[in-house]
Image (tube, rainbow, N blue to C red):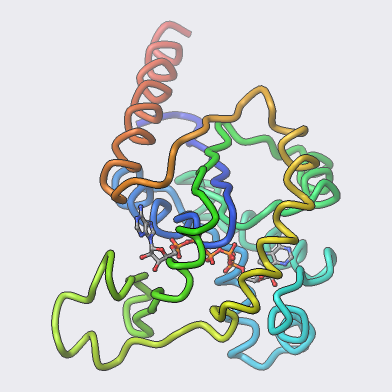
Length: 222
Ligand code: AP5
């Protein structure tokens, strides 16, 4: 086990598979999955002030204001489980100003995983995506269907998963891409995300294992 746990950022367009790969990374490496969108959706369902504000923007496919998202992400990162086990941050930072806010906290990940998926696949993925409200697991009607009828019957769809909203979300993503990548250019690991999820994970797993191995050797010789 590493003395200093792994800290990762996973990045990519909406529906590039960040949540799906984070689930797999979390299972194998024991990191805490911190998803900005999930944190916001829980604020929305709790009906908190932050949630009410966030919903106005999320419904339009726009980014919520920096101060709202920064507070929730910062609080989650400072929880003991994330401090102890390490984390994988998904959906933050999404702009240059957010990346700078993270740097100002002294937070720099070990690796920035960039999922690369062509636009046609992204739209198809959003339209077919379904979520299990009981387990939180992500499905796709065609690519990753539910295991049984019982799960199938309770699946829900996200309120921003429409063709109109995904086009806006993609537009915002492209506008911010260059700024975010400029901050992490020396630690970017680019992976093609346009392959079955197991194959995408195999690439990421290979890279993470080599980082863990090198770290363990370094810690042993220190
Ligand atoms: P968020 O929830 O983060 O949405 P997103 O970035 O648009 O990302 P998604 O969750 O849509 O996709 P994903 O990459 O996780 O893909 P998934 O694994 O689910 O944010 C929602 C909103 O919150 C934003 O629009 C914004 O308003 C607000 N927000 C969030 N963060 C913010 C921030 N930092 N600042 C301001 N506002 C913020 O996969 C998608 C589908 O594809 C699934 O159905 C899956 O089964 C399928 N799939 C996955 N991998 C594969 C594969 N390899 N092959 C085939 N199908 C696959």
